[in-house]
Image 1 (cartoon, rainbow, N blue to C red):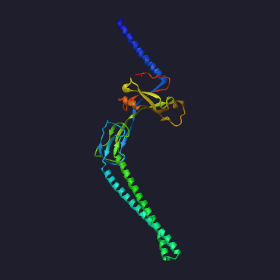
Image 2: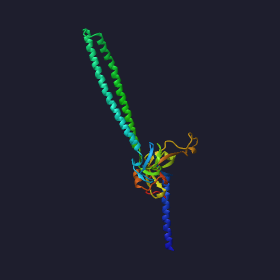
Image 3: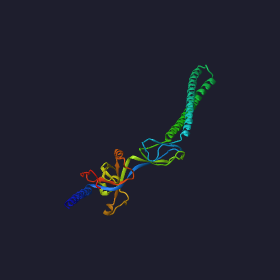
Image 4: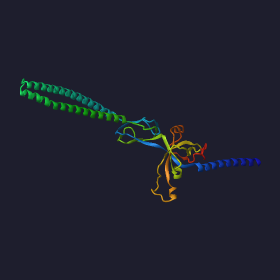
Length: 319
């Protein structure tokens, strides 16, 4: 009987100690910490194609992890490649036209310079009465009219160069389109949804995948005004996820809204002011995410914030 009584006393002592530890944590939390519910969220992107086309291949499936820049799918590029061949031919033709126009300009300038030098010579001979008036008039006409020929040749060069630039711009656009026919991941993460299959005609802007980031994961919480005033960007925080409530997940405050949400513009009473809440995010570092592979978007948990800088974080969270 005494042995049983002793065991009972020990059990009560342990239970009492646990209760006191829990009570101490609760009091400490009331003094220097704030916690609130939330769910893990992650940046998502509906990965779409910029150009229309036939979806030729899809290289990933739902659940696959992908790296930033990895090719997820490819459109049929044969039509673009055929257009590029035609564009290259147009550029070559435009370059030929530029060279021809430039040669004609050089010839026109040479002939014009000769006509002007001849006019100077005829004028000199005319003063000595060695040439007739008709010869002088003819030389003056050639020297004058050659200027318009040079101007026309110069305009032809400019037009040919402009046509070449247009052809090159078209070729550059096709090169961009060809590159964009390979749909790539904008950031690292995993494929949540695959929204198209090979053989489908895809319109420009149509989403092909929903991609969830594996490095930008956070818990969105709403803070009362008195708590928001004690929290700053970069402050240390902790997450206590329901799946592993006995563990801390290191985190930091990555965002605090500048204005309260879902409140009237003018607040009349103190009780209404106390209901103001500010949206905030508690973000998880990418290295922590890589280490804690079990963390997933949508998981519920608690976000803990320290409101008193002198309060020390417990080694494990209260359960």
